Length: 199
Image (cartoon, rainbow, N blue to C red; front, side):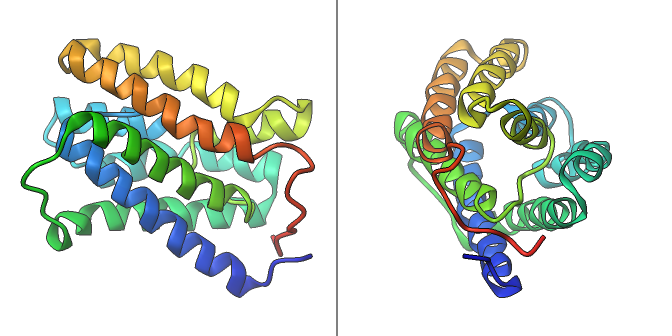
């Protein structure tokens, strides 16, 4: 069954809102994740640049690969998703204030929320840019599991955070990366989902 433009639009909106909530939990607990978002977390923790701005700028070079490998529809929807997430993460502290947050809960639930949002975007032929573009291409081209490849790369990026945050936060971030990537690893496999996007 083919997705309509409205199906894709609501998926981009809901998916990025869900991811933004997970990112907000991570930022509140001082955690991070992998991929380009992980790099944006590291920049926010190490420099006076907020997550949304860093995330948007880091993704700019990846749109060429997206266009060449995945087509204009995927690229436009990914640009929209990245832009929405950048905006929503900046707005989130103004609508949700967390006074007490267990870091283990933040790692697991935040990771699951980000994974669910990513899954929704994947199923509508969109992504959050960066490494998401690369792993989706590898899955489409070679049949490699997007979730498993992303999990391995994410864990490497999180380990590099030892230079920026405490080792306890790195361990919790690895736990979060596992939770995050379990969602697409289990639920986003070739041939499992038959929805076709307009892009």
